Length: 205
Image 1 (spheres, one colour):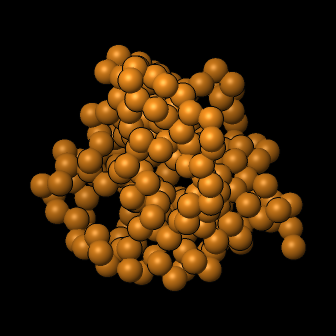
Image 2 (cartoon, rainbow, N blue to C red):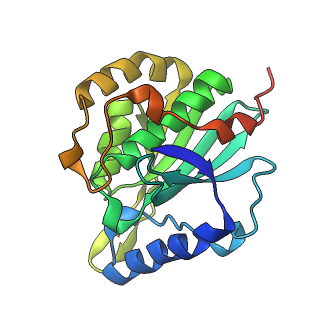
Image 3 (cartoon, helix red, strand yellow):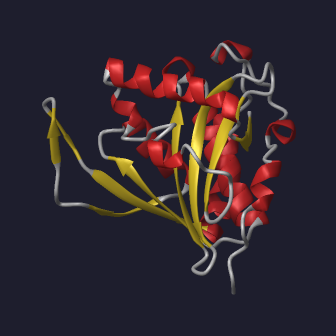
């Protein structure tokens, strides 16, 4: 997969992801919206960036990631969503790992902070494998359709990511075509294309 800038033609697909997730009441969404109203006019300027997640095999749009970066503090956060029909193919893991590598290794950011839905066990596990540590849970909970939802605050430093990344990639092993409809090869270098992320502002020292 690769991360690229969101294009006007992507709007229909991204809003479709939101509509499909809302219809099936998918708990994995965790509140993330691919095309929120306040994002519709984003142009990639400032400290907020919206990127599309696209397969290399046939350029299929499978999701998106929203990045909020603060160069002054050297910290950033993100939200990520994969279309319901494209999940369980490894796209989220690839996109998050790519994003972290670019922000830490190329852009020089020092820490990433994210908020994960406490009921999203897959996301909690993924972030744990990447080296994120739980930093807190809000006391206020929301009871929605019989399920209690609460955000889990997790953080990851650049040094810890560098330490955990090799083990994470080794544990995943080679990716086989049978894992998903949009197959991926194990040539990791070809997948890590995020040229538009190079435009992000560098943190100040």
